[in-house]
Length: 266
Image (cartoon, rainbow, N blue to C red; front, side, top):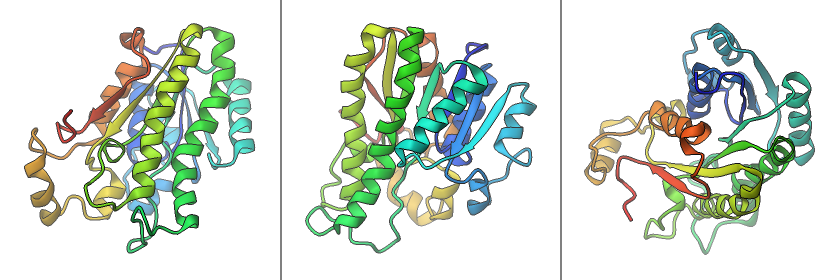
């Protein structure tokens, strides 16, 4: 129970990787605020829950939970979410910025030289801007407390080019999260707040499975480049979040840890 008595907030926590982080942190003893733009988001990809909602799943683990529907690209909504968190629990110890994704419709032009401004801005907003707004709002109560853990979710896509110019908005947004993590860590270090990031590789989340990641064709294409020889599962990422959200990482800040089975190799 490394997080007994602590409060964690996970954005995009109603399904997929975010839900894995929520349940893992609750299993470590944390009370959890579950944020999502739709708290029933698991229904979209037929993700099976062990209760009616993720909030109930946390409560069934013996922890308190608060579900908040809010759009992280709306700065006012983010500030209100933090106000609700402090009003309910009186503190915030861990922030996991998971909300985001490569959410443009299939077939949308995403090359570095041709992507439309509206599409680029949309991806930047839901990934980078949302992360920044949540970090800014969370840093206030953490500064006052003189402690805190912030875990930003980047992606392996933000660590290499792909060599063909494709997927530029998502790659640049996730690369921006890595650099923002470094800059924020330097600012908040004197307040005993650690800021780090993870960069998931090819993970079998419910959305990724629905989009075909678990197909034989996709596996045959991806597995030869993954030294561990398998695709990841949400719990692979959740265990690294555990490291970054607990005292195990008290002297680690400004870092980005790829969770990719060796796909990204420096």
